[in-house]
Image (cartoon, rainbow over all chains, first blue to last red; front, side):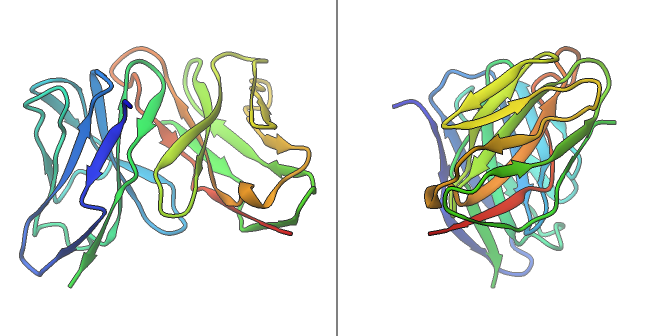
Length: 110
Length: 115
């Protein structure tokens, strides 16, 4: 089955540590996205990529970094500069208007 | 810029009750409109969509009509079930240009349906 796989499902970060969230898709979609979801709020766009080796900042990119070396993969690194990283992170991909989402990674601070 | 405003929740209903979740938007040009649903612990699933004015999206008994004159896309269902309990997000995207494919979301509305 085609889809988007996010891993791990749960992740814990220590102070001063960088962590990387994985997102892989086998839908052959060109565009990929990372969103952050906080309780009682909608999704906010962190980064997006429309083609391989290219990506743009979204609305809340500070403290995050991404890469897009392969069409299938769009990993997100939460750096130590992100002071409030506890959230639910969702990856999505699209070919055109409609976005398909993974099941998310919940990041917590130890 | 674009924005989406949803009615505040949570919404609590009894099974077989009528559901309305209001959604209004502000956008340039001619956006496409979506409703997504999120079940506990999962990602978002596309529930329905409408890409031009007066279009009606429908799926699983849910409906929403794209009303350009009132900039609204309200979600309705005639008879809810316990299994409809979830968080519902209204969203929009502008076709074309550098924002192609980028979604702007409302804050989400929690729906709980009791037996």
